[in-house]
Length: 162
Length: 257
Image 1 (tube, each protein chain N blue to C red):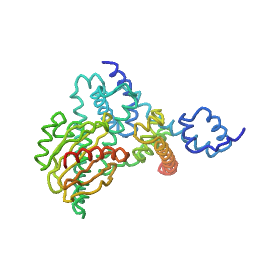
Image 2: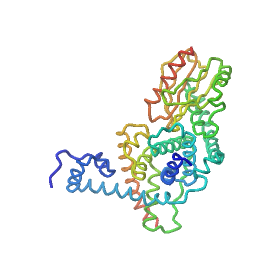
Image 3: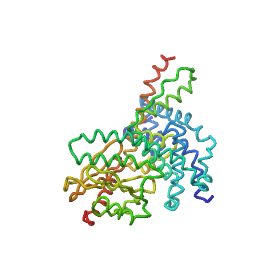
Image 4: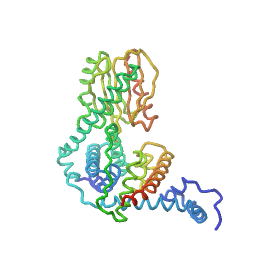
């Protein structure tokens, strides 16, 4: 294991977290991380000491976009609300946030997660998505407004189901 | 408490929550929030959202890393990732079914040049997701590939050099085109961004460059002396697509079509 391998390895937990929130399916998320790692390890020579963290997030974001594109014409399967178990307050909350994420446009979800979950700067996210910083800020604003609306809109309905 | 001289914008509220605000403006925003309960409420909701995301997903980062993601495994046994590649191939197959159905609809469309572009976008969508087999002939056999494709499409195919745009040739394949066989070339950047060039004989002699977009893919297409070209890539950066298309155009022009 060389220094490059070690730096990549140190990023795996964070990449898995980002991928899980982005793809919302544990297997698909780990497939994305695996493809990201394979690509990064294969391209070691192309990496000239820039920001490894941003580079890995960029690869993962691009791979997910390619994957989503291939699925764009597949019908979306939405799981029925699981009412069998009474969810506790925090469980319900975390289900809410996951569901709200699912309704976001791809690039908005990516911005929201990179900024709030992964703690990247607006500048870094702009580079990852290949867009100006203003676009990052408007995507973030739209993402937050949308998630807030979904969560606030769903709460009363959930209560009624119980 | 004094009102800040310049009113606080919504962008600044986001920047405040994300620690992106210049230090000298932070106290202004804090003073503003003390007198604007709606904005304070907004900031509170955004912070709660971040906390909910961490509460939901931080545990993933704490999980033991699955064996198949261990660097030592991936380095020592590069074949292990074949499984991932097979999954990607299956996905592409499913997508292929969808794309075939789309082509069905497109065949009925009136403009032949439009269907040309639709074919190219479908090929793009089908093959850019491929990890293991994106092309039939790899870039390492560039000369052989060019010779083979030229023979099949009936005019000279010379894969453009796109290094200046940060793109390396992955390779190419032969595809059925609307009227004649089509050559399909794939390029890739170090970050995995993929562009494809689709070219075939076209009924339209010469056209200007036009832009089309479909489900996250963008394409610039043009015809030059009876040969059609479609350059496809991600649709979120049109300037980049134009830059690459320009480089392709300049080089194919020198080839003489």
